[in-house]
Length: 478
Image (cartoon, rainbow, N blue to C red; front, side, top):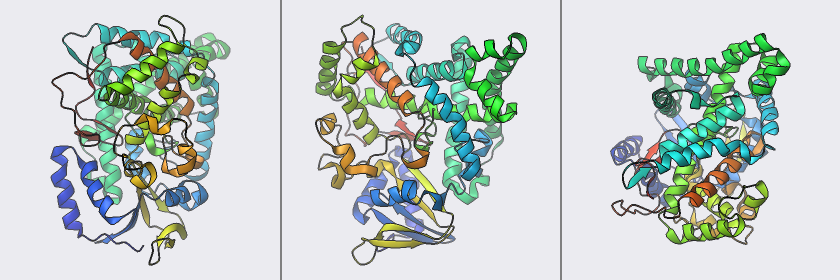
């Protein structure tokens, strides 16, 4: 590439290490990316690779030359927690896993929004019963998304567990995911981070998923396949296909990663449901985080909601489609805080990137087999060349009455693109839209607490695991 990293590895590593305590690593990286440009060749001791925020190159990797790129060391980094599934597979095994999961998302995408009612009622009740003037919505959103996911896909919600058990699982799952994120960044050196606590956390997550499989198989044995399939269609369909309870369990964990809005969301399939539980929860928290910091946007959204769905009325998909500003808010939140901020691929064969070479940086670049590529959706989504001078700001209006999404193409990746495009897109949008509308309706005085500092978007302290979230949660006043 025409642009090489103009700093030593020692300089970059030290500066990034220094930025970690402030929890503003992505903001720190923005300074370098903005100065150097969208395509960077990185070379150093034992390392050679490329970094890009160029939509043309991202499109080549995710779509046009999809077969030329694989997961590289991701499988080894994630396998202890996830096992076999779409996030750890390439080629034929990946296609098989994706098709098995695709059938389930086709099944649920036409579900009535009423399936969310019991869980949204629990969420609102917990918010309403909060003590004090301020409440952190982030952990409550996690409980909500985990409950809806386990209910719709696994046959029963996590609600049946005691709150202490739910909290313990959430903590264990978060820890395992955070370590997995570190192992991803260590690449070939992932084996350096394989502590006893990490192994125990991975085992606990698998034990949790095993419970769902065991209950479904017991129900099938006791009551017959037809009866049990009404309660556990997802699990029993997987078992019919895979014939192995451990493989079914692994697929469930991959789905949890997708639907537990924090976990591995921007993986692409990558976001299945985990774009999806942790990811969904992080997304709902960040959406609220942004709205209370821009009261005019929150007020505008509330007015549109009230004009379409009076309080107390049942909400349908048709109602949601008639609230255009809601989709603008959702797009803008995805833009500023993509659930998978950074992603990687490794060349499986000699291939090319369409941009970054030659004196002007616009010619193709030859990529050898085994070379790695990193792209940052987070930084690409904040490029002024794509989004204008206010690219760092929360401005839902940029999506109103325009063809911006079509115009920028792979410059906007809320649900990944190409063959690994998120299977749970409809599920994610339905869940997020319904939750946002219900919370806005239920709490007309939702606002930023007076004691909370309002920092510029992107400059707040962040927790950066596989996904990105606010390190301070989502503090709101009611």
